[in-house]
Length: 561
Ligand SMILES: NC(=O)C1=CN([C@@H]2O[C@H](COP(=O)(O)OP(=O)(O)OC[C@H]3O[C@@H](n4cnc5c(N)ncnc54)[C@H](O)[C@@H]3O)[C@@H](O)[C@H]2O)C=CC1
Ligand SMILES: O=C(CO)COP(=O)(O)O
Image (cartoon, rainbow, N blue to C red; front, side):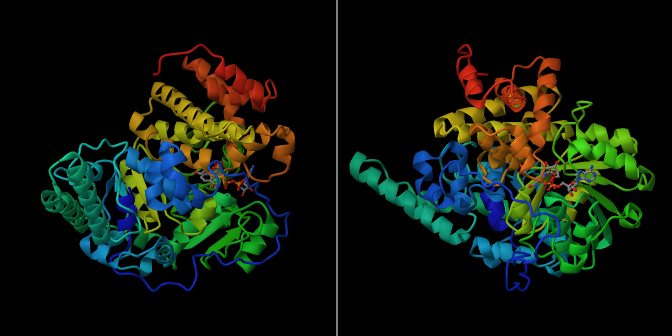
């Protein structure tokens, strides 16, 4: 995945803006009370410290991401990179020309990402940075290629990937030099033969073939999805609705992106100040993002709808606008959770209100709204039973800052996206109780296993669980201090009451409601889920956080499965 991040540069670089996208503070005071997102302490101290000490003290996931960009170790790119590495996904986005033009730093990539896609060479058709689920025949999966390149039997889970920010030639030279140094040290100390001469050519061949395959793949791609797009409506103008609106607005300056809101004051701020003063006050919105409180006005002429209303409010919200939603309007849902009253996933709630003919896609994966707004590298997955719709959505969002995998495993993606919020609360509890890194790693591993047990029983695929919407998002929300669910857990762990925690934030932490449903699902599918069901006990006040940990540690010792 690191390779794909590195290679995601556009073929011809657009002029750089003078600042990062939307990052300049809009400096407008909110009309409504400003949201104060709780900032929880970092699990592994500061990101910079993590970089320095990653090999010694970080969990395996953090180590996997460390080589990519430790600055973002709590961010979208690190989690996405590690998850993509684990799931052996394939990069289709590179060419040798692109490598030469590749930005030399993470900031360069962000700046490139700021330019509208329409301004980039050949729009997203030639700069598409999306992943497919499988390489075409003859294509070589990158991790296998890299393992072969190193001339050793590297397992996917441990295969080191080239740095996201180091030019390829420099990375190769450094790796060869390191290999030679190790080999000569071995020869000196152990009398081992020096294999460096043969390895230097071996190293380049698999990479070159990967690049050839990538060029070939992209040369066959056509993409007019973005060209044809004129208007998108976004249901819900909170953090993520706004972030997704801005992502699309940056793709094409002529595109009209309309947020459908309830709050007329926020609407006015967005239209007049170009700032979401309630949810993302530090960012300036592109001029082609507007807001309205009129569902009719918002939906009229829209070719896609992005649904970013919290799960527990989705049914009522959709009931209220369903007469205005034409069956031809595809819905891209980004909400992550399970409806408490019915136990339904979004992929059941949306059709149950709008009808089965409505085409739907579910986007999930490690993607903090703030990072998306900053144009920081983010990888998500678009899940739909309608493959062609998922592919279209992939093309709409793909940019040098965003990669979009596709999958048909809607259940797997949705279960992972919902349950990782509950696991993030548990991770926050461990943090709040200051139980330490060993406990945190054990908890997250156990949580992953529980999600796998349930998701597979419900029909999800194991590949999904180790992918972006599973492992990727679990890492982001369990270790990332921006997570609202994790923050709820931290405060519970410190002994605060849930009612006080919820009252102090105007943003949704979906895991609180989902925890309740998990208990029912565990019962229904006969899966034991000690960690995830314990969260419900703590949330409901039946157990204190400390008691829950004590009870889990005292469960009978078991065989790993
Ligand atoms: N914030 C993030 O980083 C990410 C959030 N998500 C998911 O996206 C969904 C939305 O999250 P955020 O935008 O972050 O939440 P938020 O709390 O920032 O905003 C929620 C939005 O929904 C609106 N809303 C709430 N109740 C409503 C109702 N009854 N009718 C109409 N609108 C209503 C609010 O006014 C607000 O605009 C959640 O399911 C979340 O899990 C997914 C990925 C990342
Ligand atoms: O889903 C998210 C990132 O992928 C956001 O997580 P939180 O809702 O915990 O902030």
